[in-house]
Image (tube, rainbow, N blue to C red; front, top):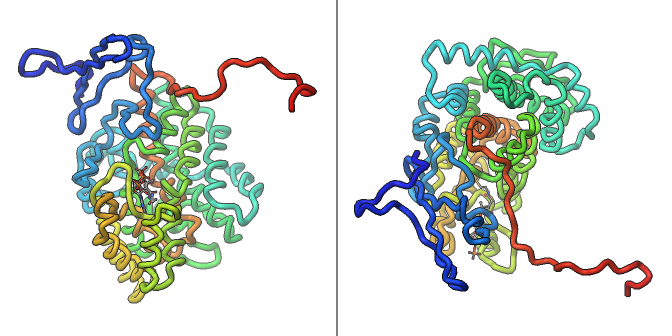
Length: 442
Ligand code: CMC
């Protein structure tokens, strides 16, 4: 990564010059080059030189930070974590190994891997007092509401890992979050169905343990299906990180003020909840249920294309991918494997999903706007088949994304150029006016 402008072949530095046509003032700005992907214009000195800000609501043309964790080429449908393609990680790695990779930058050797697994396993229990938090929620509370509250509350329990300036505390907080968020997620589920909380088991793998905490009951043996555990692990890998999306940017912005990591991750969970982001997996399933039968698909496609109808095909489209989301391809395959393992031959929702995808991919509107299925399109069908209620879908996304959030948070804190995130605005409100006493207002 180059922070200084490189010199072009003709000897001039890579720069861009802006001319203010109102007064002829010029400013020359450096162009920075990453390892791959689009170059960026470094506008840090723009305001001082011109008195102007840039304007980019939704950040469609803005790089907010320098990062070495995840790379996406949206046009080609490429997703790399620390350089490794997501397809290879999903096929050959496992979630905890990917966690290590995201956090530390390299794949672990066998010793490092064993130590990391042991560390995460040993952190899966939560403080017994934390269980009391759940009892304050209504039984029908959305589990994402519970996640926002309880994950934020971790900062009240683990004071010995909230000093962001201490590298040891930063890594302990990271391990705690990766280990405890699944326990809290399973507790949120158990609370909603009125069953007792199930403690983690240190003899089980990460995904197996999560399935155990979610579906076991104290009165009988629960045997985790290895095919389902493997699929779950793959789903976690597919959701582990995704560059500077809304929730990750939220975590970074919250963390830029020096807030503790538990509070920052709770902020990320809140941002993820929205249907345009992680809430889409829940919305996809609701949409498939609403469509009900294959013959009603054209009606919904018509609505999605209607400018006066705010209905969108959930699970379609992406800010960055203008091609098939590489995660969606793996997810589609995993979906088939899970349904086969569970002996589900005719799933009407899957039939609707397959046909919807086929019609949308051949429809001029979707082709022209480059709207392809995203990661959320098939995940809901798998999660439903495994036995999760729809309200848990986004919770599972949050569980897996925790490692991405905390890796990005850690990278930001360790960046010596890091500053508090403080965007400016284009002000369009009233200019100064005098206060009018109540009895003089019409
Ligand atoms: N169905 C119908 N039309 C769509 C859809 C869709 N799913 N997505 C985008 N469009 C249209 C949109 O109406 C707009 O048309 P026009 O140019 O005529 O106004 C055009 O495509 C561009 O859309 P946009 O909203 O400006 O694009 P964006 O980059 O701001 O939004 C998105 C990206 C993911 C929010 C959007 O595609 C969407 O709402 N998709 C459905 C929700 C969804 O599946 N979200 C999960 C994203 S992947 C997981 C994650 O990152 O959390």
